[in-house]
Length: 214
Image 1 (spheres, rainbow, N blue to C red):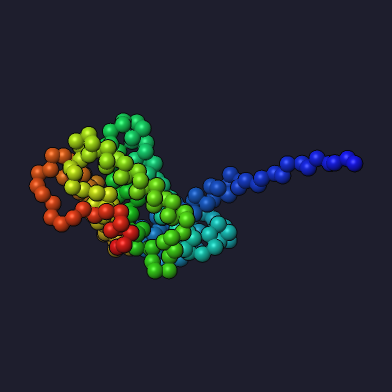
Image 2: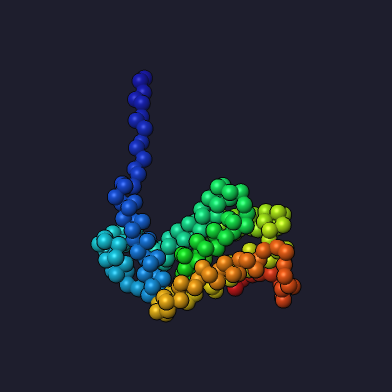
């Protein structure tokens, strides 16, 4: 009895133009969410991305899927900025600074409110991105403390909350003229995190658990 060899099955890969379209959609959505808030029409996003409505829905079946992709992409970019800083300099505090300024540029404060009650906060993609950045920031802060660069009474939550607050105003408020102060104030905050501490902080440090329970 003879057997016929089975040809290896080809694994389909997204075409380059399809990947570019998806990236354009995510970029346009992030810009418009920041400018106009989470209720911006998907056809307006499609128009800015230079694609048809059908292309948007082919990539993202509903608004939640698109919002989730935008939030994950923002988290991933801030994490990569910190990882690159660590790789290039080995300086944990410089990596923290780059993370904070990149997060401010991404306008995390404008994107966070989009995680509404109908949004699946436990989606595996979002959870993986969140855990990655939390581990990375915790590692940088531990290394900076060990090197005597970072005051001992601050935690991950302190940094994340401060950057979110300092990168306001939220989306759609029309207060873009204040954006020029964001990096100035973020740097003032970062300088206040340096060791040795000049004063005792009131209350307790904000932890990752505090962020998740907020």
